Length: 405
Ligand code: NAD
Ligand code: MG
Image 1 (tube, rainbow, N blue to C red):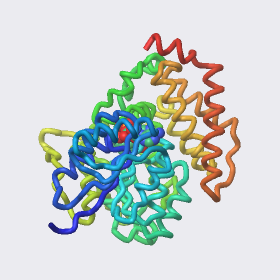
Image 2 (cartoon, rainbow, N blue to C red):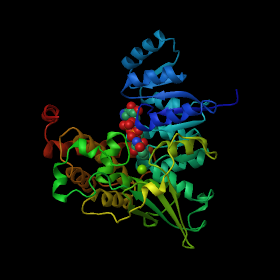
Image 3 (tube, rainbow, N blue to C red):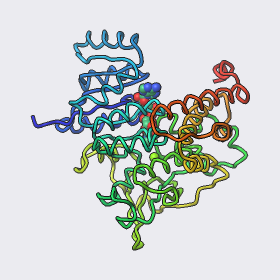
Image 4 (tube, rainbow, N blue to C red):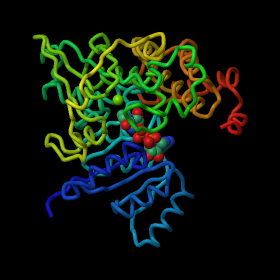
């Protein structure tokens, strides 16, 4: 057997995690799974352990770990089960691991993704929140360790594919004028504005082109996702915010574009299926079969493009203004958004109150400069406290929501 690349998947039970294992299973001659992690759906993690036989699995707490250890042992599976946030960092930095898929959702994914970056791994980054919260620290860690950072977010993967290999010299140096991120516009692109206040979590999570976790689905519905992605693009590609344009493209066939000085624009197109960017990053620089169906241009017929409606999607502006403020402002934005999305999903606030909560958080908490991780984590904690206070004032009580849900 040849040398197989050892992979850790942080968040293996999520939408990205499951798609990653699907690609890996198609190429078991090239990859082996060293560690899998999950916070819930431990039954699915158990199935994944039996199938992929990782050396380690990580769960949230000791009780979960004991239960999973017993179940695995009775099935003859020797996976070593660890528990807690520190263990996520451990499996992200194991010396025998080559590639780390960072696919935990939200701020919880920051420390383990950063651990992979510090350890000089091939980092397959799905967890965009890590770059939004701590972009400067993250990119410093990548440079210092010589880690290879490969974007999984479909837009950034498309940009990466459309840039020259040496874009790290600087976008101007390689002749790039602009990065164009496409956005589907989500499920509410054409809904009458007056109806936005009363949309349900189920409607918000029903994305027209992608099946994703609930948090990113709501982010796509508010278009906060695109705001976070502009910030992500700036850090990944060394761009200024003015160099990144957002264009609504409802078909999600062109995943993003790069415009050069000579007027050329290069785009990456594919059927909307996350296994394409995942396979690209796993195999880079080689191409892997991903199980994704080929684009049928004639069947698609036409592609549409339109500008972002900023009245409908105020979250885009909020994200850009937090990025312009700099320091801890994007971490404050991210934390407030996570609390707001969770409250919306729990029926505590309406859809249009998501932007109101975030706007209040940014107005109330002054951003501070960032030179170390602790400052980011403190800003995150403080923003969460304020957001919960805002919810007590403006939201429905949590237990009432539980009944009506
Ligand atoms: P998901 O909700 O489907 O899965 C999240 C994973 O993280 C699960 O395995 C869960 O157990 C784990 N997790 C959740 N909270 C945790 C915690 N506190 N500690 C440890 N683990 C925890 O989410 P997803 O849709 O797979 O998205 C994952 C990340 O990838 C997000 O940052 C998202 O923005 C990004 N992303 C997703 C897609 C997509 O198509 N799903 C596309 C682009 C980017
Ligand atoms: Mg995306």
